[in-house]
Length: 78
Image (cartoon, rainbow, N blue to C red; front, side, top):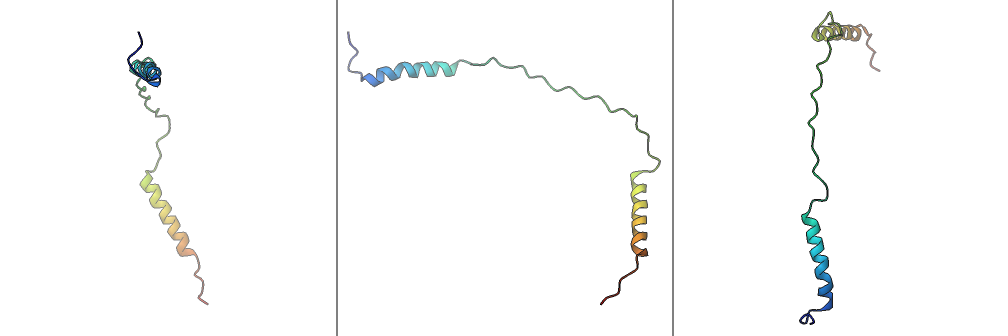
């Protein structure tokens, strides 16, 4: 017995549609286990502690810079 007045292109399209819907519903790749990153180790205290703090060194550099600028002779205006 022949299918009741179903166009030929629909008969060819229906299996392709059913296969594509079935393919989308199944997972193609197994889920991956995500590992959390490891916590890094604490840094070693092998570097010596500086004799001056950052603020003291910066203040000294500013003072030296200012002395160099003020020691520079001024140019005369033309």
